[in-house]
Image (cartoon, rainbow, N blue to C red; front, side, top):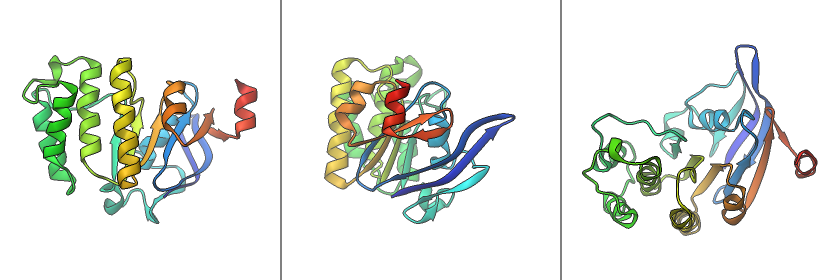
Length: 214
């Protein structure tokens, strides 16, 4: 379980998150919805330990999110992927294999083949969607307990989105993977997510408040 307790985060004078509290049960696919600037990506980075909160606490299975043991159970996939200029899908797989003990190189290469990606090609030669597919494959094959996805469907064509949906649902059901997805593709979230949260101007809204806002 991910427990977010009264989290606040500022950037200068801008209050990005204001006492946000949220619980994401283990084994669920949870969608986080909100307009641009609502604080969704910042919240993912806080859970992943990339940022530190100004106030409040985040716990993953009872551990602080900043703890090394907690981080090893989390795979964070940002909207924009970062990699070495000479990186290939194969070197990306080897990188994550060194960090995550449960990483399956065999499954990863199989998913690259499913996506039609050359494991030895430079990532810089790939489109945005192709890069995302490579990192989605790495995320699934890292075999962590938690997967944080920022705009996972962005740049993917409809057919690949369906494949990714199936892969994520299969992982969630088969090994009780907990997935938190931030996305503007509301139809995709409705299709894949068992639960949703609504973030607006740095705070969590109720379903009724969100409906009124829409």
